Image (tube, rainbow, N blue to C red):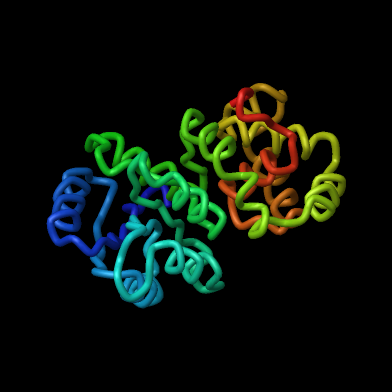
Length: 229
């Protein structure tokens, strides 16, 4: 993917928003907008047809909302290489938490500037989670407790964490603190490739879809507290 352009599908029910993101992303040579969906159902259908690298997903849409559409996309084996970047505002944190739980790789504030939008697309496209520490603190503080009905039981969380080696648990904590593979490697004196191998094993052992779900697991299991982010 280094030499290829990042293929993006935009999903939003407002034409002005769709046109705006298409125009913004079109100015970056490494990013290509391959389609635009008007609701969640169309986003799922177009994702299956176009196989984009990233879906910019609004949450409040008719026919199928962005959370349900995210779950359909991330749960589809043929879209394993497609990552969802949720479009949101600070006043709907609850939806962001639900979207992350559904498999979204992160979120982007709708008032972000063009370079932030492009950077967010790049981060998610390479498989990293885009979760701002300040917002993650609020998500955990305000909603983790109330979302337990949709989360794994405490015993299951403990079992997942206990299945990890000490090094894997150490890497999980660093991922939850927002470090990329290069930074984790520097801190632990191992190569980024070795970090990637450990992450694959951690995801397999914990039944996690991507880095965003690893972050949620680390917080819910108590490995990292909101104040430590």
